[in-house]
Amino acid sequence: METQNLPLPEIIEHIIEKSGLAQHYRVEKEGQERLENLDELINAAATFVDDEGAIGEGGALASFLAHASLEAGEHQAGEGQEAVQLMSVHAAKGLEFDVVFITGLEQGLFPHENSVNQGREGLEEERRLMYVALTRARKRLYVSCAQTRMLHGQTRYCVPSSFLEEIPEQLLLKLNKKAESASAVPAFGSFGGGYAEPASSGLRIGQTVEHAKFGIGVIVSTEGRGGDARVQVNFGGSGMKWLALEYAKLTPA
Image (cartoon, rainbow, N blue to C red):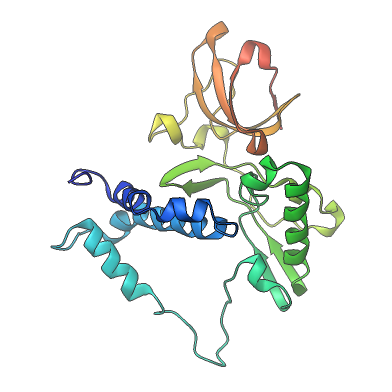
């Protein structure tokens, strides 16, 4: 079997691809949301073994599917009960709530990377969606972004959404705690576990930096020393870039 020795997330991804489901939604006009749901299935598989510990007799895949079927609907509120309502921005159109939480405000997620690649028109459509999301709140609105996020079963560093910069600062009350010191930022990505080794310039993995051409980004990997030192930076809409520190002139943001 092709999947016999693969870890659970790769088994799920293999099934999605080989079944033709992913390709089906890639060519559908409204298939992007379905593809994102499939990505979440891979993410859930990546955390399942760690959370659950032991795997049943049928193997990891069977245990995961059994767990998913048991979880489905288990925590749904009954009619008339007070509960948190989870929905997409599209599904929230026409509805209002006293308190609204908007999560995932990161470059590449909201605005989505596909819309950014479509140019001005795609970005404006995402901005209209952002307006819809903001105006669902009657009394209080919370907006948030993650420093790291699991995508396709891998942990990635995130860049805050450009939409956050468009909200007047006097309207915001920042609730987040101060970020941990750079020396305590875990080095995920190409380094695996452990902690980040500083580049010769003092820049570290997880640090937010600014580039004259590409704008704000987050360092996700470093290599080399002295004149050979390079960093890989996630610039959100501008993508991932390897930059030579000697010439890049990165500044802490």
